[in-house]
Amino acid sequence: MAGGVALTASGCGLLGGSDDSGSANNASGLEKPKIKVSIMPTIDVAPFHLAVQNGYFKAEGLEVETVDAASGDASLQKLQAGEVDIAYSSYTPFFVVKNKTNADIKFVADASSAGPKSTEIVAMPNGSVKSVHDLAGKKIAITAQNTICDTLTKSVMRDNGVDYTKVQWVPFPFPQIGGAVKRGDVDAGFLTEPFITGSAKANGTVPIVDTASGATQDFPTAGYGSLGKFTSANPKTVAAFQRAMLRATKEAADRSKIEPLMVQFSKVDQATASLTALLTFQSALDARRLQRVPDLLQQFGSITSKIDVSSMIVPTASAS
Image (cartoon, helix red, strand yellow):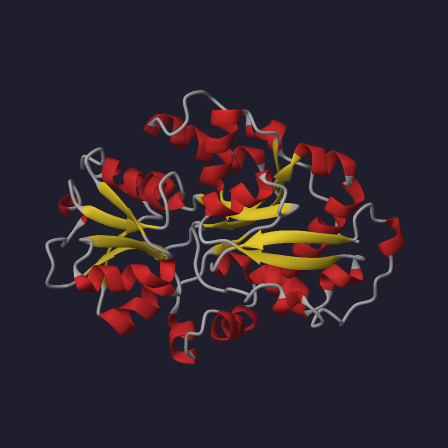
């Protein structure tokens, strides 16, 4: 996530030779059997990592290389620049770019919804922010503006009658936000798990408000997008990616499969991993559910006109 949480792969090394548990049974049938996917250090990508480690991509004839991105906006920039074929991001940057440039964004897979206490505003217990009502005019750390971070924060502030228009948004990568709050560089910060739990342990930060509440309860947080020219030219490749992600997402419902990934890729200890509140993993795309995102963005003025999500969705391939 851009919204999101915590499972980074270091470059493409993770995906290099480790994806060997399946057989490339239809590689010759794919238009582009080697693809690049930009990802972020978020828990939302857990099913992606499972698909790599368990050979689900390879079983579909796909060789996947990852490219790390610092934020959803950075991930989307890599997509538009042609550096990657598919980009993981919180949904917000996709819709902002669609609105500003009419980019032909196509969603190929869902990733997550915000589960209870999986996305929180945190602060220091002895600081000036004790509740959502103290956030007006404060400095709040987020990964970047026009991401799920400020969108959820604005929504929960509005729900509680708090003026969000004078907030000073300060950009930090997720792993650095807790430290920025502790040092006093900012008054509060938006975090997702396992950074919420990790920062509480390392920095003494405490949750102030659950941003997945009120109007944003179970809010769609992130997904995988591509460009229309890629999805049109490579329908079999896209379908193979979708099938692998669907298979892995079903497996991700077992928490015991997720916690080791947090330890491995986000460098948290097992105790922290066991305490984290997980997002709700998704894979199949639902236009009615996703429509909540651009509708909310339009309310905040982040986008200026209505966007029809159904026109941006590549129908999800059925499991093979």
